[in-house]
Image (cartoon, rainbow, N blue to C red; front, top):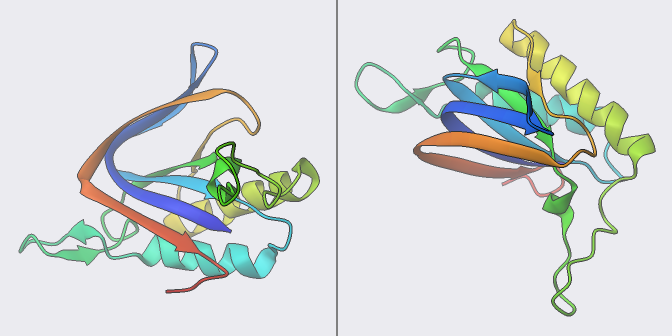
Length: 150
């Protein structure tokens, strides 16, 4: 699993002119799933995302998690996070999981993150042409990969 985690002042996802989900202060998570991902990847990544200390404390130091600040989360599926661009100029997405693997793991990630936050998580529409609007706060953007834990 690969995630791009952005601290945002707000974020929303729209499909065909209809806003599916919108959040205020919190995290926008772009989530890519590959075939080899499992429940173990979901659990590890949720724990990291929910506890990532990227929100300011009283001293202005990034020392608080989204849980600690009562923030929201919006999770959007994004198969392009597994683009291979090594050969030629047209990316290949062969590493991205098909619907049979990706949809259940995406949904599971959202559910488990919601449990960690104690609130429902905003979601995009899997496989749709989505328009994402956000105001990155900081900017703070972190890339995480369950198979390359840095």
